[in-house]
Length: 167
Ligand SMILES: [Mg+2]
Image (cartoon, rainbow, N blue to C red; front, side, top):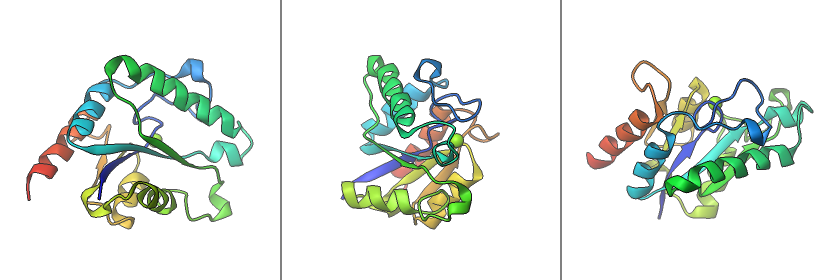
């Protein structure tokens, strides 16, 4: 079985001032390429799991979400790393779906598709719900990036590596 790091996208990998959906505005956050490369080298799949209620709210369309992902991949390319897959929840909170984080629908779908052992996998995100997702899905851990402990993506990635080495 494989292992993965489930990645929040907005304000974890790319800058987001609110419902980002314009590819030309996509900007990688500092140390993201370095952190992703470390995780990849350690054998983790890199899988984005993203709440995109802006779609359900009618602020933008699904194709805009994909266009932002394509731009993200383009920006990562010169660094020699790519995201392996993208999952998203298009629903509004009141729709009560089972995919909106911190619910586990996206992670479960990814685990089935990629044959992932969740107990060896992690979540990195900028919100409490991302850490809750890790707990709810039975992952090994959830890292809150942008916090006092893990100020940037690279430090979050390094934390995962240190937890990987200890048995
Ligand atoms: Mg976020």
